[in-house]
Image (cartoon, rainbow, N blue to C red; front, side, top):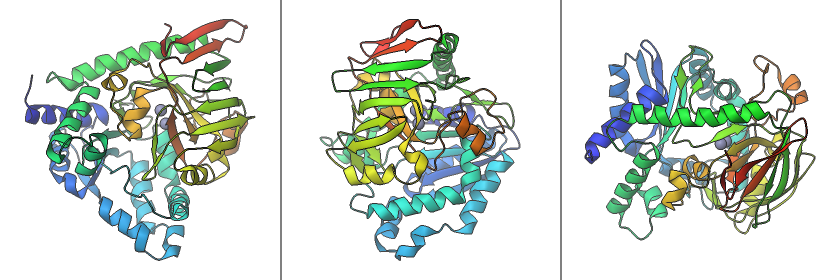
Length: 411
Ligand code: ZN
Ligand code: ZN
């Protein structure tokens, strides 16, 4: 087994060579927390080795983010600095590669006025609209990957002391990224191929609707729009035609629901880390696609705010299938990070839909809406998979096909 330093080098290589698959002459925008400078430098070095034109740093700091939310004047949360929209939108349009190293403390914004969080999301959502649009339509290559911070590691492993917790979290991150044998790029590609095989089967069935049921109380019918397709594994950048892996890790295959075609009740199976807060016991009831009632044992006001940031936030935008027996799920670890927890479990998202629909390229918002593609400035995944989850699909010619039996793929 390679030692820690060797694994970390292999991980960095995976993020640059396979995550964003950086091409010679391309810029890299690297988002990282200031206390992750070591690994940020290693990523920059690997990027220059791959022929990067220039690495542009986008630094953040949990403590300063929290301080701003608590202490800045209230009206600053209604605007977004023009330089920020220029940075995001222009580099996205150029086709720069974006690597987000996520190490955020999931509880960093605990106790912050949820209205400040909501207003700031609305403002930044408007300011970086071009960036978001290009991100969801693969207009530039991007990758979100995790790096442990002490605060995050302590939350995940409360019984370990800090250094041990960070080491343990690294171990879980390596395992989930298939980075254990010193050949992470090759092992990741093999995994990505498995996901693409499932995608092919689902696209062949071309289901009209899916019906979810389990003992937690989920009983939900999800219609899929005409012309939808499933995606998963590597995706192709529309700008340079190169395949990239938007999430490392990923276990999901996903598509979009028809905006007005979701009906019934859905209950989350794991806590959700949302805007620096933790939501537990989430339950939504939907009618004609719209969330008509919601509740949560913890964080209900945060959840309610999140579904009210705009009209589309109260409709679903993603349907994702993940076997209950996935490596992340089998680890038994609750990560309080959507990047990991969503890959341990079947999930939905409320908010913006990935336009997984044939012929959607270049369509304007109204045309997308009329095809059943939800639009919002937000997109929040929440986990619904359980060991007893059953999903049945109904085809356009009325055949009923088991898709999930006892939490896992039936095929
Ligand atoms: Zn997802
Ligand atoms: Zn999602």
